[in-house]
Picture 1: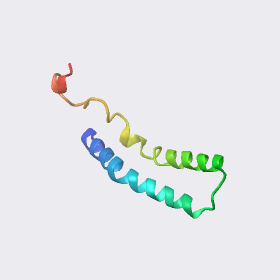
Picture 2: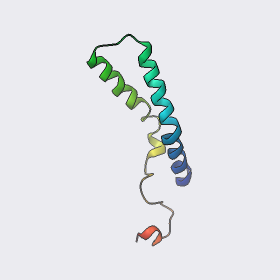
Picture 3: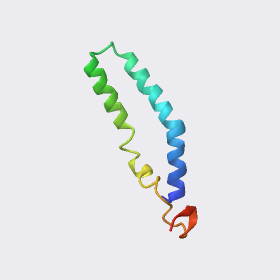
Picture 4: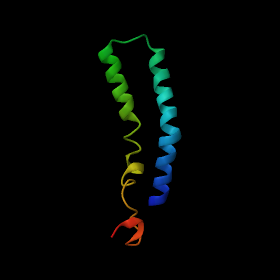
Length: 77
């Protein structure tokens, strides 16, 4: 996947997908009876990690300079 595509896709995921996932995770937990505090903490940590692992390839290297950019662009090199 090209760098620009990954960059745009990661922005879309963070601005649209992640809020939707958070709403779904809170809704899912609200369906359960109130678990003990430690179990609720473990559940939220697990749900917080579940979204990140499948999308790791999309986010890898996005915060760095574009690999195909010419030297001197964006004040680097």
